[in-house]
Length: 474
Image (cartoon, rainbow, N blue to C red; front, side, top):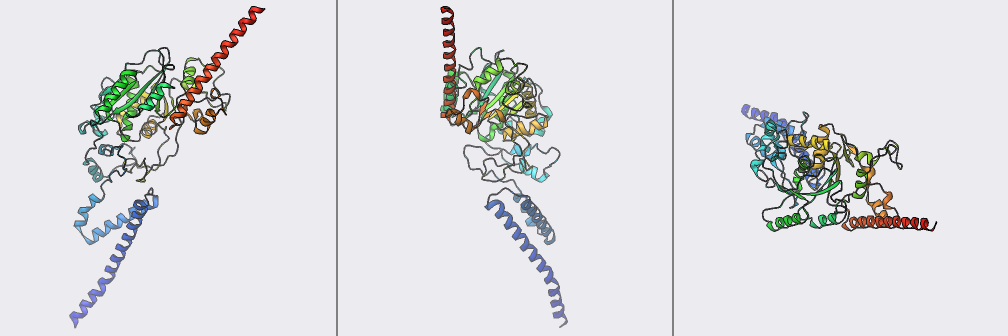
């Protein structure tokens, strides 16, 4: 009987412990199910509460593992903490590169990756979007031997060390004041043709013009030799295309952007301005031509139609230094949803918001800002959101201030009013239209300019004829 009583007592003493463990496991399971439902099922951006819940759950799991001493579960933990694969199912974009994460540079002494996570990221295979795995290296390994001049870094583009131009153009002539670099995709031949017929036509880029238009694109896949031959034939006809040897892909946009800065520095550094635009934007080259050619009068430092504290477009374009001119974006939240086209993981960018930056559809740089941001990009790691990377993070690091271009963008409502005749084109002081303008609208704006210019010319000739006739009669 004594033995039986001792067994019962031991059983009764162990029951509360077992009940606590069961309750703890139940709480953990409920928390995990809640986090999975919140993040994975509904595909929402993680909230602070969800992150906190996940952190507390992880802590409870760790304590349970220590208490129960189950080494087999601890051995499985690293694979559970590994980085998630890119789940954006768009075949036109490449997978995120592992070296982008292993060379992650946004720490700014505020965020440090755990050694185990960093080792896991460094061991990931290299994506096929880079020209060659051996050409990519982390920012920490390349920072010790960074070049200082273009002649030394001609074959470097951020973390690519075998960079070269597949197609290039002669340097800018001395009279060029503004180089317009148009970001385009290899297959966008219709958009390039439309630009050459409208705002980028020889009428605006003649031998005496202060403007030059060049199209930038990346390499095509080796499985598409016909496309590359077509691009070379197009360039042979127009002599206005620059192509890099990195693959033209969605997540390689930063390479194209930095290539624009590189080409400006090496081929057109004497120019006053670099204007970077997308191929679905109308650039008001007639007004740009006029503003660059005509000297600024002493009494035109501000717009007559705006607040006197707002500088005029002419004064802004003739500013020689410290110009980063764009429609700035403020307090842009980092997208975390797997459904988002712009999804960025916590490993890529840990903060909740991006710094102020320029959307890539239209940006104006002065030459000194181009040089500054180019050097910063060559020293930094790779981040695929190019406008945030270059005009946001790197601009902030180099103390470059953004000047707001918003008053000089022709937005869709006003564009439609101009095309309908409700507004006069010559009374709209704008430099760019909003991006994604329809080809028909782009062409209609140019035809409206030609018609207006023809009417003014005819009226001038008529007035001169009438004046001569009056003089003869008198």
